[in-house]
Amino acid sequence: MGKIGGFKEYNRADESNLAVAERVSNYNEFTIPVPKDKLKEQGSRCMDCGIPFCHSGCPLGNLIPDFNDMVHQEEWQSALEILQSTNNFPEFTGRLCPAPCEKSCVLGIIKDPVSIENIEKSIVERGFAEGWIKPQPPKSRTGKTVAVIGSGPAGLAAAQQLNRAGHTVTVFERDNAIGGLLRYGIPNFKLEKGIIDRRVAILEAEGITFKTNVNVGVNFSVEELNQFDSIVLCGGATERRSLPTKGIESKGVVQAMDFLTQQTKVLYGESIPDQVKATGKDVIVIGGGDTGSDCIGTSNRHGAKSVTNFEILPKPPVGRSESTPWPFWPLQLKTSSSHEEGCDRNWLINTKEFISNDKGELTGLKTVEVQWKMTPGQRPELIEKEGSEKIWPCDLALLALGFTGPEKTLSEQLGIEIDARNNYKAHNYQTNVPHIFTAGDMRRGQSLIVWAISEGREAAREVDLFLMGSTNLPTKGKGDLPSL
Image (cartoon, rainbow, N blue to C red; front, side, top):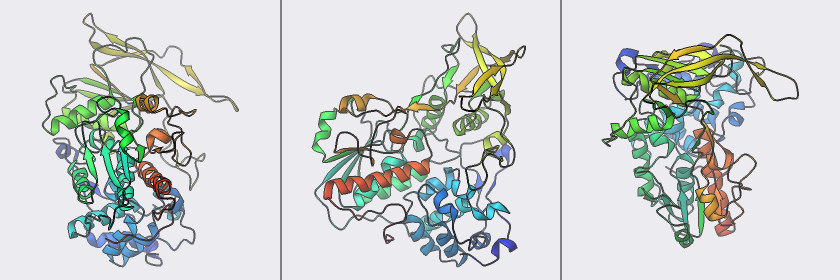
């Protein structure tokens, strides 16, 4: 695939970013695309490696060497056709995926891996620019109806696949706009919301019905779902993790998702009278993942006085750890664009107390340094370092601690069983209620967008099989390429 020996001739080239001072003045995306002539070279770097480990590294099973080869040959429309055969929304994954495919790229053993994610993004954006991506309504309808609950990436993928099979699909979203986590959980500087709107317009033109401000089980009874032949639950994992820490109720201790959601809604003209702002404040973000990084970037755009990040785990190595050799997902330090914009990062820090004044307003955090005791066959033990307590000035503490699982309103009202990991229990995406299926974070727990799309696609196939007795919807590595 690509150009034989191309990986010897060309080095990896990634998108560059606007200067920090320029990009933190607004909430727009700030990447600078790789020039078109360089993209051909990047496709040429894909090796004829025999066994493409990138296939197994990608949760969608994307045919990566194949579309890389088409980019090398400048057959962009063919590249798009190959990409869309396995990925409904490459414009999302091309911006937001941590690219496990690149971590398992064979070239990565000896050099920088192929820039798969950027090639993917470039293909789909070329497709939109050229008008190649058009609505594909089904040629006929089956007469079957399906309700999809939740409009995040899993719900949207399930809806599109089921619609392609000819079923009549209605997507219910409890918020005021479609997109789920994509809409309000991810800042605009990583995903401008016009990208979502562009795709939703195509899905609507294909025949999918979207209903917003509909919270099934609250303002829309579960009994009303009986009108549908099948139901797919894609509500995500939205139960937020907190801390059993003294002072957690202090004014100024805020869940990260509340902070991020408010900012996005304000950008689109909504009035949030009590919006949480970081302007002029000493901000501490507790949690070192992607959500914590998003809080850092947003705080810098607010004009925070200072931004500090706490992580309870050890600082990862700069290079790939020996404990996670190729082709496994590496234990490795990740520095995001938000970190580069300004942040004091601290590892092995545990918050002991949120300190407040007599008005209940947060004024500081008390922490202690920790270390992890590892004993074979036992759970790691957190050990506090004696004499390491410290008080940090803090007006706003953002809890970016992840999620503990899906909300249980629907499971309780629909009689859905819960598994040992606190998720909706399913076998082949089918719950204990035969006509109800589930996919995405609601089924597997908090995970990646690329996994959500994969889950939605696979669940749709099982729903189609349940409704019709057979299915032509593709599964990973199978199925014909769809026409554009």
